[in-house]
Image 1 (cartoon, rainbow, N blue to C red):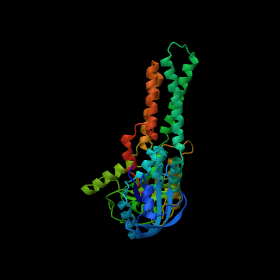
Image 2 (cartoon, rainbow, N blue to C red):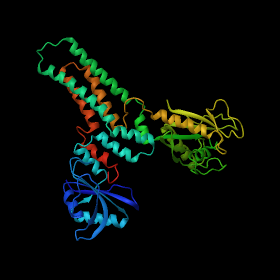
Image 3 (cartoon, one colour):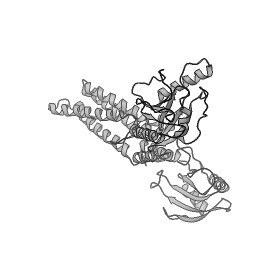
Image 4 (cartoon, one colour):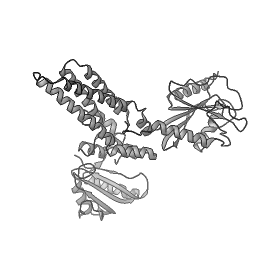
Length: 432
């Protein structure tokens, strides 16, 4: 395969930058750059030289011969000074030596293709790079260390054993097996379908943690929604004015609650309006509120609320917040009373939202699914297992078991993943 390179450290000027190189020609590149190859896996200081012998930088060099490297190929890391001129000069030198810039995710893709990790672990690498909070970091590390892959492998092993039994029934139909064998196989199929079904019906906690939650702040005009989002975000997200209908579009603020990234939405005040622009703002508000993981429904404690401003979807979590308690105490019906203007009750509201964020993403049991493609493939596997329970012939049951096994294999990348590799690895940063 081509020899590829990329800066694996952050963009911009820095004291140190790391250039990663991988591929069949990596050893020749190393010899040309350093003149003297360092021992494997020993950090060594070397002068990096161009093909003309010009010194490009003085760097710390690490040599990782394959297959014991990140990609499974010969790999090289150059820990250089982080100036742009140094990086450009070394990149030009690598191109002159036959290397090419790497595509996004190409290093991890090669690690997957060379058997250094399965597809679930490769996805976890991207999740770890993108992690914003401690909870996301823990989930990504757990997946990268094989927790989810191990669970999937256990199901695959059990399916293989079931499939072997079905093949025996097909190949040796004259053997009169006791009814207990058939009953045990059916019981195992039912058990597998149940375990996979539980993984599917986990409330999307793994996906929610990886992607972050969305909490919409909704209510009638002039109840203090914009003041509240500013208070929760501790910065000026929205314009605050006494004129009803000031907020027309949906504004967003990203914060951390209970170790979970949460996007707060400040929406237009929900009411009937003759103004075409405000009507569009209300339409967008209703659409975003309908998609939110939870809704903070704000009312004005200083005035009665008789109109129904929100129709929550079935099962949607709604936290009622009475604002302006500095003017009038909140009614007992409100979950929480706050003064967004003066800060009264904001800490309590933040704690309530943090507890909710943790509840929506908590996975105290087995490692959760973290992507929609995992859930879709596992759903297909359960469908095939349910079909296998009703199959009238061993041949049909065996085919259903094979399809279930294949569906799980697509999650880890052991079968039929060529069509999804590009979509998975294009999300990676260059250098990973």
